[in-house]
Image (cartoon, rainbow, N blue to C red):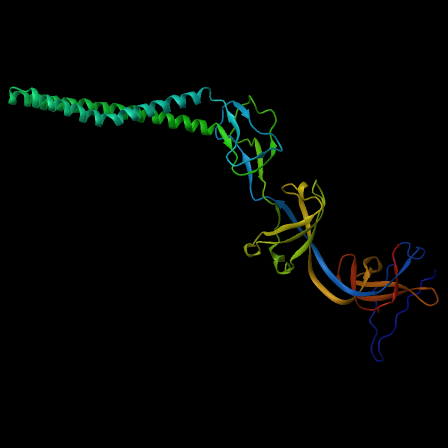
Length: 354
């Protein structure tokens, strides 16, 4: 098919605008083509807003001390745990038996200590009654009584000090052992699911710098974006989102979440989706955000529009069946379509690539 390029002259008295050199694409002269009509409708210019899946909390589990043998791992990947559940513990020998013994001694000595004031009162009363009813030499017996009471009080004071010292000493030992026991165990900080457990931990030595497992909360997850400059465009109630990879891949619908707290991060709740249960922390998604919109706009598929320098053109077919060039001015670019501002009218037919 022969190619003719006809350019119309400008209005009378005006010099026509000089068109840029037209570089035809390879194969344009012989390639097969189909015709597409210029359409009119709503055109949206949108961008893909990157986001990632997040849970409210994630616990990376570390042992608080190094150099101890790992005795037991209570959970495995996929287990559901409650806040306060023991996850793992170190081997500290018979520390629990020692704690039980100390607690018993502290309770016993505390009880004996509480008896002393009562015993003191009973002993003093007994000695006083002996003085009153059995005394013959009042002065001598009164002096002996006073000395006996003073000796009794000193003995009880020594007992009190002894018990207090024993209780204090045992309490310090108990606190130390409980601290060791607490440091030998790690607990779940919230309700959640175990997503990772290191292999072969039992029998190895603890290291405070090594994460041994990860727990993610079981509350509803959400998506987070970090494009503060796009906040003015996020005005709709719901948006379409696509997750391309992972077990959660598929199409989703998300809504604005906690908008009043937005800043560097923006939050989106999941309304529905293909594989919500398969979503994992840090799964990547893209939210379609409209940045410009025009009603009743002329448009063509992108495949119809070609470029020559900074100019755009399309091919049309003349009545004679020849291919001709028409220069066009473009506007908004939507999903696979481009607005035609000047150069064509609704219903005009242009050549589409392929």
